[in-house]
Length: 458
Image 1 (cartoon, rainbow, N blue to C red):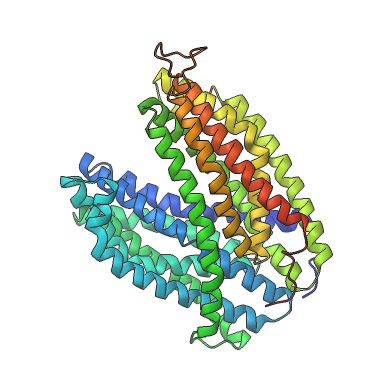
Image 2: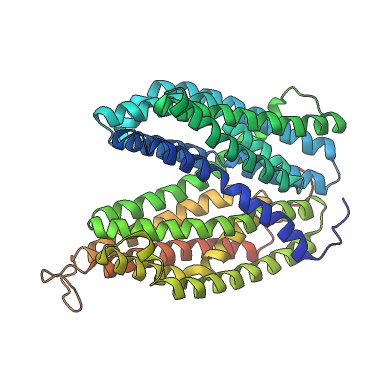
């Protein structure tokens, strides 16, 4: 496949900007459900909150369906093998549908247990179970959409996912409103509406992809060796993603043990972190597709140069967002809460987050580069190493933040426990400094070698 003659900046932006919009789709779906159900009552809102937490966890872990399909398709395209690219994409969709079916059946049966695991009781549990069960019919389509999105990214098309996601979001709001209020179906109607829209989105994706499958000479039946290859790569990416989730969950648990003000401020800071992560993820997606194409075509030097360029971009982007975030650290918290303790603590956390933004940019882009290169095994094992480094440090920082060190200087509590601002600064120094620092080290060491640059379309 010939190299793209457009300037690199145009290539990256052409992929990253639409990808950023499409990445917002799933959180917006869940947000729309929450907003519509919020007027039904407190128990309904709490139930949907628990249901969306479970669903978001599942879809977050299953994101490997996109991240394994994108590099496989882009590498085959780089090697000039359109048939192989579409075969791998088709197998990815079939794997997503089969996994979605299995998870949907298990999720329907396990919904009461899952709701109880998160802590739901009484009426809240009933609404959480209803939301989960009526979300399960849409789960195969939801995972199929992930795989189809991965195919199009591998084909260097991020505009189609943006259009489909935008249309799906608008339709989701309208349909859920009708089902919840017009037909009086309540929480179940909200989940059912989202399930219907997910199948509609998958139908649109298949309408776009089926002619491409036929043009490439790919049959519609799955290839078991192809599905097995996608599952093998995906299992490593699943472990990688699980390690990230454990790090986030452990940090939340540490914040929970330090009091309501610290936990509330942590949630505010983490929301800002997640929002910035969407922009960085968009750069990572561009890296996945472009690196896969270059390595598929055997252009190792071009892949190395592309990596160096995108790392520079990520550092400059991180520096710019860090400066902006530092300037807004005193402005943002009052927009979310009137509580002085939470505001003060959030400002402290935001300042630490601002200082870590260049490291975040570096981590996200190199992660995308190695995913694009198909280096999933290293990413998974490095994720385990990063956790092994972070969790003991987090435990130590939580102990110090709780007053375990017995220090009294500058502590706001006469008993020796630090104030919420110091507590949150300590926790975010652990997450943004130690954990992201460990990820930066493991990713950077790998990128310095040639071990990840496997060329060819396989």
